[in-house]
Length: 209
Image (cartoon, rainbow, N blue to C red; front, side, top):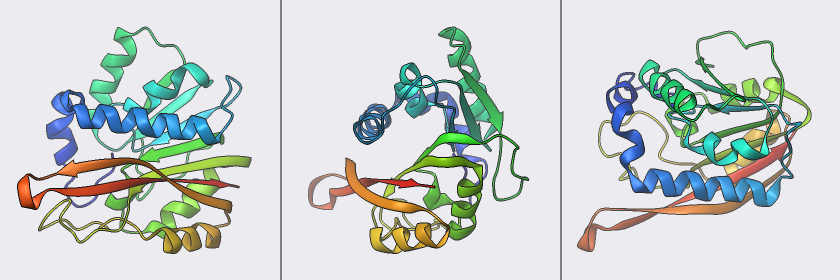
């Protein structure tokens, strides 16, 4: 994942990232939600931005063609490359990329998806414009992220977005050029215990270029 506010967090946690059952369940649920709305095929070239250890791409890999998995965390990419090698997967390629600071790569994709990444990036409009540019004509963008919340998900000191209001994000996506923007609820995370327990829904936004 890309995190401009705490650049070392994901490197430090990469080795144990996949040990969290909630992260596994979240990726599988979002993968099923994407498959329910888009007719995936081996002819589709895909990009996962903010891929982390690739949990979502591993869920979608059998249905897609070549997948580029991009992240700014070297620690996450190291774990991802180990997983790709261990499973002898030939249609997944990891690459270091930060769309906030790096130039756009030349490739264009029929499908771009991202999970729990956008709320870490301050310039939502700039990110949406970059993702629009990276899509091939009539391509699909899938963004899975937190619904708007009160800041309790990350707690004090977090410099990113406290989730997103769906209508506002849809308007931003349309301003970036996207069409047919639609939302579903793909997953819900539980944090805390007792009276402090909270539910945090994760939406899936699907849009077309």
